[in-house]
Image (cartoon, rainbow, N blue to C red):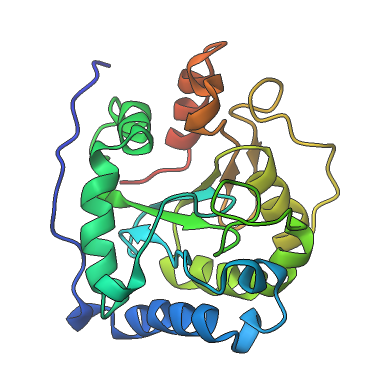
Length: 232
């Protein structure tokens, strides 16, 4: 198969077709900024006051769901009245950013699949272990609050496959969401391309930021594992 350069669509799904989903994303922002709902008492929310909350990016009707651990990009929510406006702006930027390019390279050789077929979620909606966080946050405690958001996302996105990017999101997804008893995840080495036949199925991948996706044939292993679950 030859690689193809993915297009960079700038049009995201409209609220007319996804009212309930869009309302959910708006509610996540409101909860994070006001310490309400599942966000109440969360150490990640307390640390940043919900300033950098990320309800998710790209296509909430996507057939593929990528999962990172937490948001690392800067966000000024005063610039956006709704999640829809935020998604239009941030998704367009993501296509041209390092992460967007890495995922397009991963997906490129798969026939009929583009980044616009994907949903990009954070297991924890506020920063916990990057420069946006002011303090060291226990990710397990934060996920105890955010886990209900992720469960609802998985239910309404209903992807054909979920790809956690890195050790932390894979661990949170497999042990906390699916309740599996597994050995510590090594996404960059032993477990790259590993699959779990849960519902939806899971393919473990290295994150794009640490270089492991391009080592040890990892990109090809992850891509082949993804393909076995797709019916696009």
